[in-house]
Image 1 (cartoon, rainbow, N blue to C red):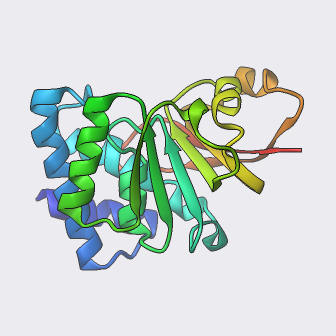
Image 2: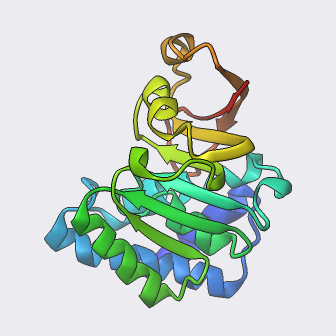
Length: 211
């Protein structure tokens, strides 16, 4: 099965009906990531098939559980975005959302900017620097993937959402110990199980909001 076919199969399993242009951009992003990774070591995963599952499909697995109102016209930030995950796949799949990538490591922001140019992502902004230095209240939602503990996540990025804004933490197994260590001002709104096609591992999305 070709990489294109595997991606199409995974998208269908997620219930995502993306236009051909978006599918082509996802494949182009994967090719760009593989090319740059050989030199800049952006991710420990080298195998293209594993990149497809553990990067692309894993990033997109949040879409089936997100409300449409959380996406269209909303300002999102992906903090500690690394090689642009999950921000770039989400920006490709949802051109109606505005996605900002926040990353402190320069070689990774250089790659992100190149990806923005080559993929023609007008709804993507690359922000170099540390998340705690960003101005407060600039986003409707903030997402992270393998970024930090929940307590550190709210400590570093809790100032970014505006009123009624939310934090979305992509995790593996439900981190009950991290939930118990959250500051008193923060509460878990939702704990959604995520299904990643081709991955035999637990994934969840923790949605947080400040009281």
